Each structure stands twice: as structure tokens, then as C-alpha cells.
Image (cartoon, rainbow, N blue to C red; front, top):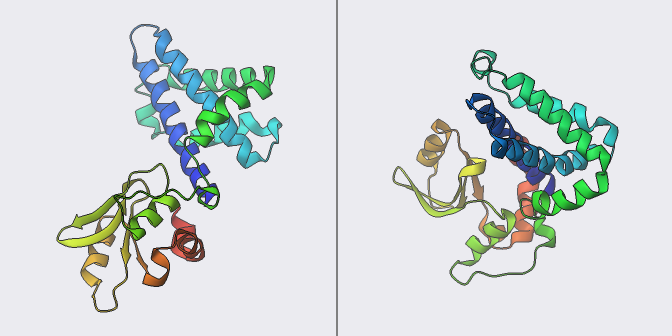
Length: 222
């Protein structure tokens, strides 16, 4: 589960980094504030890359470049943003050079912000309870920390017990007396993944976490 959040976090930050560089490349003047934003965002990405590289620092720049290239808009869009490509490679190089000047400092300063705030391991989560939520909702909240969760969401007249927009995920506590054909169709046409949770595991977040890890849909789509 933690790796899924790492992956989601790094892709989100890569997209933010690209958008900042696009904004800077589109600016008429040399905007030092946007430039600092780009460098800061790039610095936040370094600890996440190191997580996937398992500490192999020599591959940091290549991994950074590869992730960015995978998330770029199509070439005709890129070409409309002036010196975007030049700025992009320049920022990546500068961020990586700064990292190699003092790796421990970059990781220490960035990891707390980039990892502890964005990514939590539910297996290590404290047993906190939100009294305003029921057992099922508290269970979902622990498995998916730090993301928006919409409870009792109405999808064209069909109730979804929990909807997580960031993951395009719809979750229902399975009722053997209910037909979910319409809900499945609505989710399919909107690109949503529907998970029907057995009632015996939906209100225990540890069992819920193990269940989500065990189903192929969860592994493939997250």
C-alpha cells in the first residue's frame, strides 16, 4: 500500500514540476519566484526517486528525466511554450547537482515534506477515530489517508458508500440483496473502478487493506 502512495505522490509532483516549468516558459519576464518554485518542487521529488532506486544515487538524474518524459504533453503542445524543453532539462540538472553537493541535507529537508505529509503507511497509523464517521468510513479513511473521500456519494441515483476521486475509485459495502448492475455500468462509463466490499471486512481497516492488496484490480490500477 505504501508503494502505491509513493508512486501516486511522485507522479503528482512530477506533473506539478512540469506545470511550473511551463508557466515559467510562458512568462514574458524572468520570474524569479516561479523559478524558485520549480527548483523547490524538483528538490521534493529527489527523496521519492531515491525510494524507488533503493538509494542508488548514480541513477537519480536518469530516473528524473525518464519520469518527466513519460508525463510530458504531446510535442505540438510542448513546442508552443517557448523555451520549455531547454528550461526543463536545465532545472533537472540544477536540482540534481544541488543534491549531489549535499545529499544528506537535501534528503533531510525534503523528505519530511515530501514523504511524511504526502505518504503514510496505514499499517503504522495510530488508532485514531473520527467520531463523526461510522466504522466503515473510519476504516476507509485509515486505508486512504491524506486524500479526498466522499461518503454516501450519489452517482446518478445510485449510492456509493465511499468515492475517492483521486484514484477514480467507488466503494460499496456489498449487500447480497442488492443488484449492482446499474452502478457497475455507471462506473464503467465514467472510468471508475467499483469495489464491492464483503461486510465482514469492510469495517476493519487492517482486513480491508489486506483485501485490497489481494485483488488484481487494485494491484493493476493503483
